[in-house]
Image 1 (cartoon, rainbow, N blue to C red):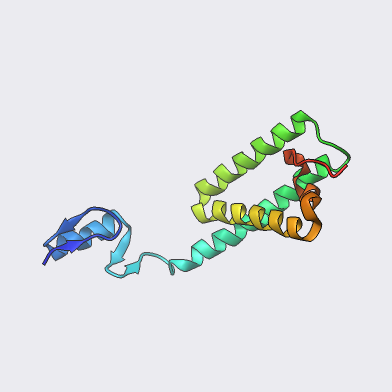
Image 2 (cartoon, one colour; image 1 turned 30 degrees about the horizontal axis):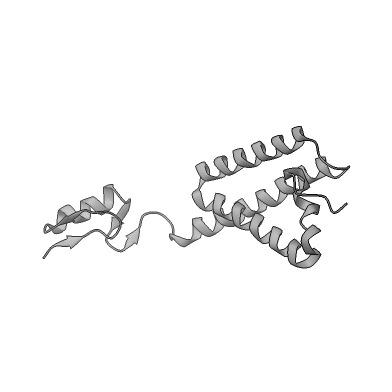
Length: 133
């Protein structure tokens, strides 16, 4: 009976070869169980850590732009720091980067709903979001 891998195009009739493929390529110790701790736990923890770091970074960047309308240098630095932060989080764990991106999206839409079109200016002025004035 031919076995097909759900993650890639690998297929074989040999049970041992399939188990070896899953162990070496996809890092599964035995069929049906991932190696190490439960698969959902590190992803959820990384997601929350990424979101928390993004929230802290966002407010630190907002402090630099709170005095008034930010100049081009502050906007460019804010974008570069944020993109670098996403790259670093993605390198640590891809779910950490997704957590950061999710937090940014949630924060933007909550402020948009709560404060109207100018609501997100509070946290996103460092990125060049237009001023309510």
